[in-house]
Amino acid sequence: MKRVLSFAGNIIFVAVVLYLCYFIIQAAQNQSPDIFGYRMLRVMSDSMEPVFGSGDCIIVKETPFDEIAVGDIITFSSADPALLGSFNTHRIVDIVEDRTTKETLFYTKGDNNDWTDDYTTCYEDIVGKYIYKLPFGKKFSSFLEKLSNREFYFVIVIIPVLLCFLSCVLQLARDIRKK
Image (cartoon, rainbow, N blue to C red; front, side, top):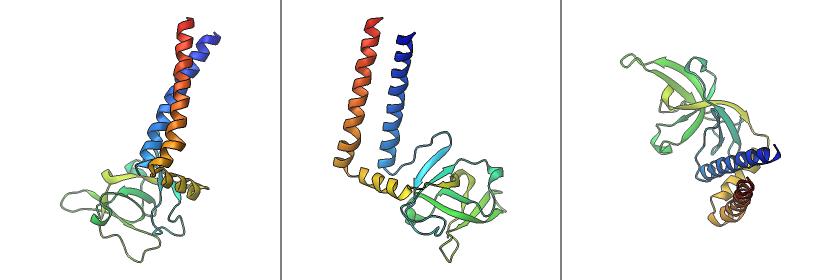
C-alpha cells in the first residue's frame, strides 16, 4: 500500500509540475492560461483607477451571457487597433442589440477615463468578469515582469523545475523497478 501511495504521489507531483511550467511559460509570454474558468491578469494601465491600477493583478471568471449586466467590469479581447487585440478590462456602461445583425453589443468605459471606448465588444470577445484584485498583486506582477528576462527566467524557474522533475522521474523509476 505504501508503494502505491508513493507512486500515485509521484504521478500527481509530475502532473502539477508540468502544469506549473505551462502556467509560468504562459505568464512570461504575457498570456493568461485558463484554470477552471478563472484567469489571472496583470493590469497595464490606470484606466480603472481607483478599483485597480497599473501593476495590479486581478482575477476574472468566465461568465454566462445572462449574468453580464451594465455596471459589471469585464475583460475582453479589444477591437481597438491601438491595443492589437490585447485584453482590456473596463466597466460596461450600456448593452444594446444591433438592429441589423441582432448581435448584442457591449459599450465599455474605464472608470478613470472621461470617454466611452471607441469600439464596442460582443459576447464572444468577453474573456471574463472581474471578481477580485490580488492583495500582493503588484509584487507578483513585478516578478512576472522579471520573467520576461530570459536569464532570470532560466535561473529562477527552469533550473529548479527541471531538478524537481528529474528527481521525481528518478524516484518513479526506482518505484517501478521495485515492483
